[in-house]
Image (cartoon, rainbow, N blue to C red; front, top):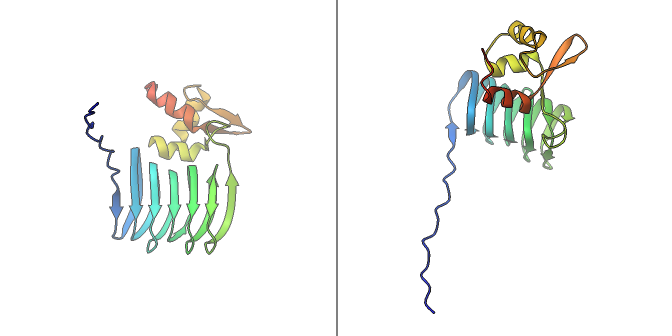
Amino acid sequence: MLRRNKPAQQQPVERWIEVDTSMAGNLTFKEPVNLRINGRFEGSLDAKGKLVVGQAAVVRADLRSDDVSIAGSVDGNITAVARLHIEAGARVVGRLLTPAIRIDEGAVVHGSIEMQATKSGSASWMNVDELASYLEVDSPTIRQWSEEGRLPAERVGDGWKFDRAKIEDWLAQERIK
């Protein structure tokens, strides 16, 4: 019996944004993006998706992304929502927050590492300032919305904490008024 070969299905092409020059500022990507920093970057970066700091990169910034891989130099706090990989030869100074971490032999890390549970376990938490940056509003507005019950929030002493997954569900329901 003869069979016709089905045409091979094309795999989706993974697209990357490459930063090969010097940049300074506060960048926020609301949609998932694959971002690779190969040059110098100063400021802060909040992105969904993959973030790679290349071997020649020099970063002085707080970084937040789902999947983070560091091969260069980072001086700043790193929050990896899903996983963090620090490659051999990398140099990292700062506070690291992630549910899963891999540090290759030959990497240098100065600072603290805080392991958090994944979404399937407990939550990925944000504080008032992190949520304010994420939603692009000021911190007093976040506190007010929390007091009024307009945000999914949990009181911690005199402050608030926010489950990122619940915030994203809240955003999807377009509850911002």
